[in-house]
Image (cartoon, rainbow, N blue to C red; front, side, top):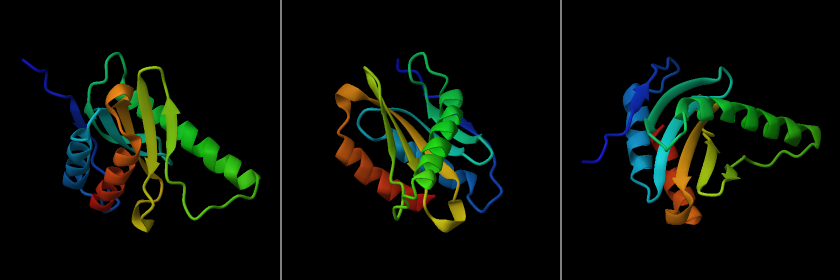
Length: 139
């Protein structure tokens, strides 16, 4: 019998409903190779929701730690005066996994990102990125 993925939510008071977070995370978990997903506020470092149980990984801690990655990249881009239209994603490549950080760019959700853990052998990154663009519209 397959274990049911862990699902945790934290209410968010900036207009994004818990149900939108749940729908977005469930849809993300349907992506081929998805092992876990979190929605994170990188300003407050608060993890708003998680779904999935990647082996040996505390998803909430990993996602919260992703705030440092996002902050560092945005800071570095500011230091060199590079201001692209938007930061689409940040990819961290491990030996068996991809950790994809996708900042949400809609004005009302500035400061939020998706943190997605993917099985490296079962993941087609262009397809994942395409699907995440669609999922971002839910949030």
